[in-house]
Amino acid sequence: MIDRYKESVESDPDDMDAWINLGDAYYDEGEYSKAIESYEKAIEINPYFSEVYNNLGLSYSMIGENHKAIECYQKALDLDPEDAVAFYNLGFAYEDLERYDEALKLYMKVLELEPGYTDVWNNIALIHREKKQFDDAIVAYEKALKINPDEPILYNNLAIIYYDKKDYKKAIFYYDKALELDPFNAELCCDIGDIAYEQNDFDKAIEYYKKALELDPFMIEAWNNLGLCHTFNENYQESIECYQHALELEPEDPVLYDNLGFSYSALKDYDISIKNYQKALELDPEYVSVMKKLGLLYYHIKQEYKKAIIQFETVIMLEPSDSESRKILITCYETLGDYKKANKLREMKTAN
Image (cartoon, rainbow, N blue to C red; front, side, top):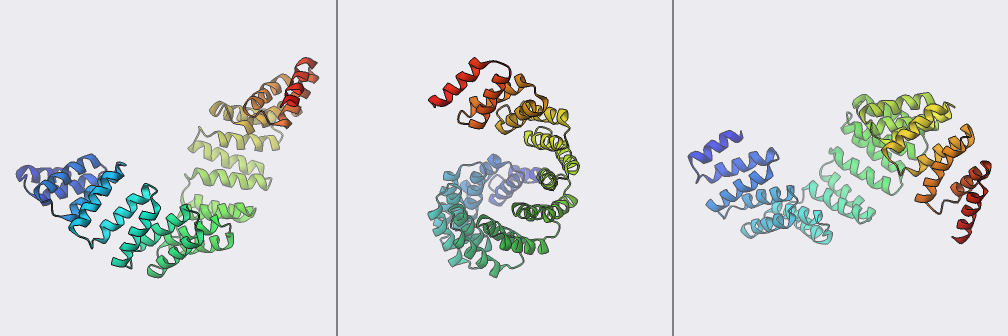
């Protein structure tokens, strides 16, 4: 497509439509700098076509140059003061710059021109959510749903608001509505699983995480969360299988090794647990909670106090106020007969 439009502008460099078509083709391919060049050529030929300024503004916004995008949208509105799309794009640019009050005014102007513009209500709701104005966000989504009651993303976003409000019953209701309209959406299943997990309803969470994975077996989050549910249900072997599936997809995730370490420890397979905790720390050397778990294994289970000391010394260095780790560290030194270091730690604690 691009080659065809390039031939058109080469054969007739004054063909504005050819330059616009070339710009559109570059835009669709994500080549925004070339799209900008093409739209600017079209403007050189005819500087009075508002749609080109809109397209040029969108291209600038895609490369993060929102201030230039705003100039383009304002130029489009100078040429066509009733252009709802230009008002929308201008509002979106201000929203991207976190200038929310200006964005809201522009979105309301869009609704004056086109009352059925559901994307506008969605964006208004997103701004209210960002500002923690959840009730206003709900009102906006409800208005959008009156216009377009068959749009699953609106139910999804409304569910997120109720989730933020910790109204889990309504959140699940709207997620279910979204799922009715989009039954093959793995993300929605995962979201419902997350809410059930938050409510400690692990059996229901397992049901929805499994549904998500049937639809998309490459969802790392669903594998990990399914593993956590099995962990809370004390089905540690099942949890291990889930974490291993997740690690096949993301082998460099320290959290997964942490979770594996916990499950193996629960099964009293301490050597494998230690290996997983060590791998987590290899990937994230400041993973304090893993240091504590590893230190406790060395201290309580393996009684390898020197190794425990290494872990708890690092914990204290990273978190000097951790009194529990300091107590264990003192006990380790005393067990090894190093009372000087034990007393020094006590003195440091008193000084703090």
